[in-house]
Amino acid sequence: MNYFSTRDKSLKFSFKDIFLRGLAPGGGLFLPAKIKKYNQEELNNLSQLNYNELATEIIFNFCSGEIEKEELSSLIQKSYSGFKDKEVVNLKKIGEIDLLELYRGPTLAFKDIAMQVIGNLYDYLEVAKDKTVNVVVATSGDTGSAAIAALSNRKNINLFVLHPHNKISNIQRKIMTTIGGANIYNIAIEGSFDDCQKIVKQLFNEDSFRSKINMSGVNSINWARIVCQIVYYFYSFFKLKKNNISFSVPTGNFGDIYAGYVAKKMGLPINKLIVATNKNDILQRVINTGEYKPDTVKATITPSMDIQVASNFERLLYYILDESDSKVGSLMNDLSSKSLFNLEKKEIDRIKKDFEAVKVTDEETVSIINEIYKEHKFIIDPHTATGVGAAKSFKNLRDIVVLGTAHPYKFNDTIKKAIGKNLDSPEHLKLNIDKKETFDIIGNSNSEVKNYILGKIQ
Ligand SMILES: *Cc1c(COP(=O)(O)O)cnc(C)c1O
Image 1: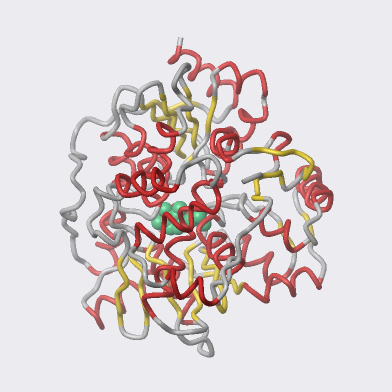
Image 2: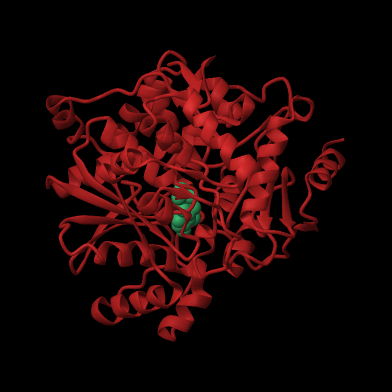
C-alpha cells in the first residue's frame, strides 16, 4: 500500500515509512493512496467474524504487501490478550443509548486499542533492530499511559511522553508516571496540550534532530492508530444489526471520529458522525460556521479533549477540498500566518453531509453523569458523558452509538463531585499506581525538550 501527504501528493511512502515517521515531511499528514470499499456481500462476510478476525481483515487493507495476513492475525491476538474481554470492546444498552465501551484495556481508555497493536508493530517491522528508536509523543492524558503500557521495556526503544503540567487528572498522571520501565521518560511541560503537540511537531520537522535521535511518533496523527480504530465502528455496527446507525464521539484531536469517517468510506452505511466537544469547541465552530480559529485552551473536566488544534481535521479537509493537496497546503499556510482559515459554504455543506457537531459544557456533563447514574445505576466518565449529551441533542436521529472513551475511575475526582461516590479501581487495572511517581517538569520550549532528550540518550 502506498501513502502520500495531504500537502504533497507526489511524495510516496510505504506503510513502514509512515508508521515510523508519523508526520509527513513539510508538516502534512499521511493518507493511503487507495481506500478499499466493501460491497454488500463482503460486508455480510465481515459481519460473521469475531473482533480479532475483523481487526485482521480491516487492518490488512492498509499494510498488505508489507505484513503477511497470518502474522498480522497473531500480532493482533497478542495485542489484545490482556484485555478484559475476548471481544476487546463491549456494547451496553443504557436506556435509549447504545454505549460502546472501549476502555477495557490495560490503561482504561480507548487509546489502548490502537497502542497495543502499535507496540507490537515496532517489533514486527524491526524498526529498532540495528539502532535505538526514540519515540516522542504529546498527550492530553490518555495517549501517554497507553503508549507507556505498549512500549515499556521494549528493546532498543525509548519513549518520551510530554504532558501538560497540572492539566491532567490525578489518576491519569499516576498511571503514566508509575508504570514505565527504564526506557520511559515522563516530561511535564509548563503549558497546554497544544503546546506539547506543537513541540513534537516542530521536532519532527527538524530533519537534523529527527535523524540524529532516530525519532518516531505515536500521536493520533499516526495513521496506524486510526486504522486500528476503524475496526470498532464495523464491529458495533454488525453487533447492532440495524441500518442507519449514527455515532457520537467525544472528540479532541479528531482521530477517533476520523476513523468512523474512513469506515464510512469503506462502505459501512453510517448515517451521521457526531462530534462532541467541550468548551474548547473549535471543531463545533468550524463544522457549523466554517471558521477554523484556535482559541486559547481552557481547562475542563474532560482534559483529554482540552485541545484547540485538532490535527486530524486536515485529513478530512483533503477530501472536502476535492483531494487537492495545494488547497490543503494553502489553508494550512493561512492557519500559520493568520492564525485562522475559512471554509466556503459548499465545503461546510459537504462536511455536514457526514458530520454534526455539538458543544457540551462542564455543567451539562456533570448533570448527564448524574442522570445516568440515577436512572440506570451506571457510571460513565466525563468524556463519555459529552458523547451522551451530544447524542441527546438530536431528537430526530435514532440509533446513536456513543463511544465510551475512558473508564470513570480515571476521573474519580470529578465522579465523586458529580454523584458523591468514590470509585474502586477496576479489577482489570493490574498496575500498582501507588508507587513513587517519576517525571520531570520542564519549560514550554522546543530547545529545552531537545536538550532533555539528548541528555537522556547520550
Ligand atoms: C483521546 C481522548 C479523546 C479524544 O480523542 P481524539 O481522537 O483525540 O479526538 C476523548 N476521550 C478520551 C477519554 C480520550 O482519551
